[in-house]
Image (cartoon, rainbow, N blue to C red; front, side, top):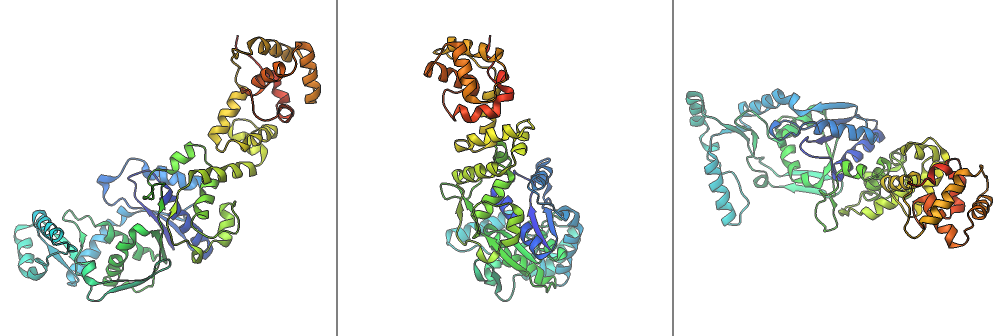
Length: 434
C-alpha cells in the first residue's frame, strides 16, 4: 500500500502534486492500493474546504484514491500507542515548563550545539508520576531515544545512519492529548502497513524518528523509503510560487502538468506522454538525484504540444463549440500561443463585434457591408476577389481591414488558412460596432 499524505492548511503546490503522482504511478505498477491521507490531527491549522479542494484536484488529474483517510480518525489509537510506550517504560512523562525548555534551547544555540532534551524528567520518573497523580500536573510524553544508530536505505540518497543523540528524547504526545505529527504519521503508516514511503526530501530528517517509533511499538515489517528532490524556483529556492489551482487557472492542462512533473524527475523515453504511458515505463531507478528548477517556459511548450494532440472537436468544446473546424482554427494559433487562456483570448477576438480601427474605419465599414450581403463562397480566392471587386479596395487597403474584421488583429496567420474554417461564421465574425 502506498499513501499520499497531506495537510489541509494550504493550496496544493507542484511539489505536493509531484509526490501524489509518483505514489499513484508506483501503486498501479505494483498492484497495490493508493491511499490519500489527510493529516488533520492539529485542527487549529486547518483551512475550511482545503481538503475537498485537494481531493477535487486529484480527481481532475485522474489520481483516484482507493481509500480516503483522515488522520484524526485514529486519534484514540495514537493515544493508546503513546500510553503503551509509557507503560513499557519506552517513553516517559515530562513536566518541564516551556521556559525551562527555551532556556536549554538558548544555551545550546549560544554554545553552537545541537539542542537535546536535558533528561531532567527522565531521571526522576517516580516522583513525577506521583506529582502527576496527586496534583493532576499537565504532562507530555517523550519517547526514549534509541540505544543504537537508526540505519535505513533511501532509494535516492543510499544508506543513512542517524546517531541516538541526533534523534533525542522527542515528544510524541502533547499535554492536551494531541499526538505530534511525527508520532501520528509513524503510527498511521504502521497501521496501514505502507510498503513504500515516497515523499519530499524535506521530510528525510523525520524518517529515523518514525522508524524508532515503529521499532518501539514492535513493528517489524520492512518499509522502503524514497525521498524525492524538491522542485526549485528560478532563484534556486524551494518553490512555493506555483499552486496547481493557479496553473489550471492560467490555462495549463492536467495532462501537461503530469507530463512536466514526470519529465523533470525521471528519464523518459519521449518528451510528450500521458499518465497511462508513464505507468508503463516509469522507474524509481531512474529518478534524478538533483533538485529540478521549475521552468514555466518548458511547461508552456509542453502545454502547446498537448493542445495540438487533442482531437479537434474536443479542443473546440473547451471554448464552447462542438465544431472540429474551430479546433483546427485554434491549432493554427498554437504557433504563437500556449495556454487555454491565450487561445480563449484569440477566439474571443475573432468572434467579437469589431471596433473600427481609426486608420481603416471606412474600409472596414464597406468590406463588412459587402460580406454581410455576399452569398456563401467556398474558396478563399473567390471570396477575396468577390469582396475586393464589390468594395473597390485592393492591396493593403483591402487585406489589412479584412484581417482586422476576420481576426481582430492586423496580422497573424494567412487568411487563406483561416477562411475555410470560419466560412460558416463569416458574417458573424465580420460584424462591426455601430
